[in-house]
Length: 132
Figure (cartoon, rainbow, N blue to C red):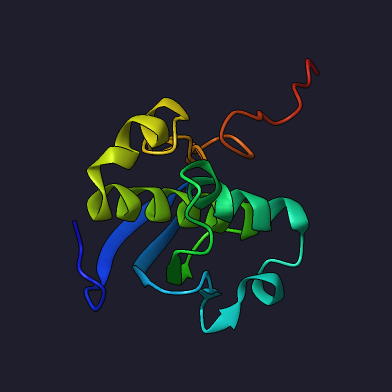
């Protein structure tokens, strides 16, 4: 178990997004790239995704979260934040692990954009076939 001044670091990933998450005991402030959560993620859906792990273990007002996220789009970044927060919570308190793992928040989403192949327009889209 972490003491009050200790900061726990964890890394979350989704698609091309990487989130470095720092959690310490506090009042429930969530800061993403030095901006408040509702300023960085304008969509309520993305805000809720970031807070999923904290809500699940009923620790929304117990911890301050600071996230540095880069790469990918907003949805990928929100997923990476969620993954990082879930990993950090498990490091803080092992009793959270069963609930967080059961919800599938510790599993990294491996889906990534498929690379473009030569001779094709995109990963799988072929040029139009012309018989003559």
